[in-house]
Amino acid sequence: MPEHWYREAVVYCCDVETFQDSNGDGVGDFPGLITRLDYLARLGITCLWLNPIHPTPNRDDGYDVADFYTVDPRLGTLGDFAELIHEAGNRGIRVIIDLVVNHTSNQHPWFKSAREDKDSPYRDWYIWSDTEPDDRREGMVFPGEQKETWTYDRTAKSWFYHRFYDFMPDLNTANPEVRAEIKRIAAFWLQLGVAGFRMDAAPFVIESTPDAPKDFAFLTDLRAHLQWRRGDAVILAEANVGADEVGQYFGDSGGSANRLHMLFDFALNARLMLALARGDAEPVIDALRDTPKLPESAQWATFLRNHDEVDLSKLTAEQRSDVFAEFGPDKDMQLYDRGIRRRMAPMLGNDRRRIELAYAMQFSLRGTPVIRYGEELGMGEDLSLHGRDAIRTPMQWSPSVNGGFSAGQELVRPVITEGEYGIGKINVVTQQQNPRSLLSWFERMIRTLRQCPEVGLGACSVIDVPMPRHVLAHQADQPERGAMVFLHNLSDEDVTVDLSALGNHAEQPYELLADRDYPSVDDTLSKIPLAGYGYRWIRLRDSRGRRTGGQVVTRGGTA
Ligand code: NOJ
Image (tube, rainbow, N blue to C red):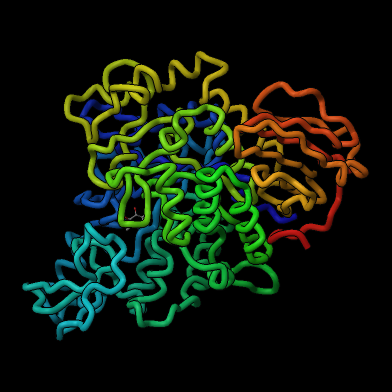
């Protein structure tokens, strides 16, 4: 089997500015992050995804980039960054960074030059219209925070196009010079040792305006370029697109993906939220069944919470209102009429059983799990902060001043100090001392997953036996690496599950992880108790080839 490290990875998303401050200026930095690498190694993560690290006016959490070729001086120097890559590597952790090339900040020298001079070599790097475009509101991504997608620039005497905020003009990615520059930027960071990229807004990068056709060939070209420079580099892309388009994003050359290596699974994310809200496994089962078959080496990245709002735009109005009712009933908790700006623990009522269930389910589903910093502690949100910043508060390391994040007076964002989610209750030091804490559970769960490579590498299928609606029973199977069965109970009702259909083939199945001590599973798998909000991860076959229950499964679903 070819080595595809990203398919067995556990990805941790970290915003350097809110993780650990080393010099007391109130902003997290690379030296601070380096001191926390041992923490990440103990947690068991293998890939660190850094939110944007470049110089920025910081009006969109760094996604407004002012220079792609260096780091934001608030975070440290390029030297510090190189040390980070080295130190992470020493601990077996790869680092990927955000590649934000759909747009730049309006403070980027390219845009400044482009707006000031019609003859600037950078004029055509952006998208202009000399006449007022017909529908200047079409295609807005942040309704409520954004008024239009074409804005008149007095200096340029022209309208410029921006999918996102008016301070983030879109690059004209149809321009071959811009494409060449994007490839240079990626190659530059590979040269500095990153293992790949989280590609921001991938669909927009290949579609310069809403009417322009998507140019998937650019993704093929970018991938080939990356792979020449670093054979095992990856692109993990943000593309909230329908099942019918997914194949084009991954690409297919002789059965193997040749464009993006990984896509965030937004469809599964929304259905997971719906399933948790309704206490019903059906939405997840539907999502798994609807998943198209992927080419070899293509991979999903699963997630529950990322650094943005929980995006429910692909649910029906009725489904969305069920999720809002359960997880974000107040208007203030919602965003852009489609999402929720809260973290998982508060959404799940800080119910430890439900938090474990949610993350056990995510991590056991096909693909590579991605987790946002602080979720492993059960951190909360600060709704007094603007928009998506609610869930971007500093990491809570200890119960001491500023939660151990910084010795500074003025922090990049306030630490949560009060209440159920304050630093007194939720912090690393306290939880590391307690073997029963959520953090200790995450460590155990992640280590267990790393012993189950079939989840990332193998086929995932819903087990086709009668099951109560609130129980998700699925299987991960990879001929050379083993087979696992997973049971997750989305309601608080205890049940007994019958998996004897698999038992004929299983020899000495045993449990690797569960919400409590259950009696050992026997060979027949006929009566398996499962508590309310309980879960059980059961090994059917290990990599030494012990027998398993076998139905024919494919990566997309049951064959
Ligand atoms: C998607 C990112 O996830 C989001 O945080 C950002 O605001 C937009 N892209 C614009 O870069």
